[in-house]
Image (cartoon, rainbow, N blue to C red):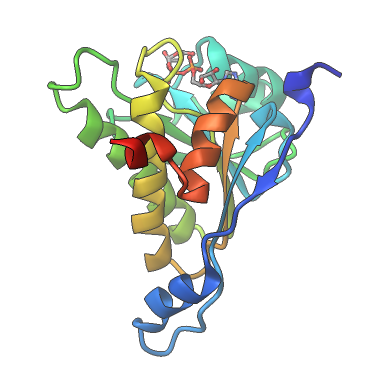
Length: 208
Ligand code: APR
């Protein structure tokens, strides 16, 4: 199998005690550790509660991960998407997974990169936050994200990855049922970027 289809998982759970404290602040909730991890894989192969699709606002399919998910899910996915009346940039909508190993697909529309001064960071953060909210509302516990906007939409991955990790670290603790979040990279280069962020050892920033 090609390197991309192999799973090179680096499990990097954020410290459960920090997370337990964060969750314990919500009275009456049992603190469950939130596991964040980065892997290098084809997201359509992941048997999780949900995989996120980097879609366009029509929700009628496309190339990249959108095309891969629709190919793997089969035509029923497109039929279900047609009923959703599209999706705004920064928002997210849930469908079933159909023929995918994942139970659900959460379709989210990322911003097209311009120069970072047209609301792109806020819209990208909104994608991750809304996907977490949609997953939590559906009672899901595991979710995988592709690098939203980092392909055809041109968002530099070194700028997008910190937004992805920070948004998830901020939103997920508010939804105790969500315990497993995967950043599913499609190249070793992207994986290395996420790995540094999850390990908190982004030496570049230390060097400054
Ligand atoms: N599994 C995991 N990641 C993947 C896969 C896959 N099977 N295929 C592609 N990727 C990665 C890309 O390498 C990139 O890092 O997903 C990231 C997002 O790239 P795109 O799929 O191009 O999505 P995006 O940049 O958000 O552009 C969305 O492209 O496909 C169209 O319909 C889509 O118009 C929309 C636009």
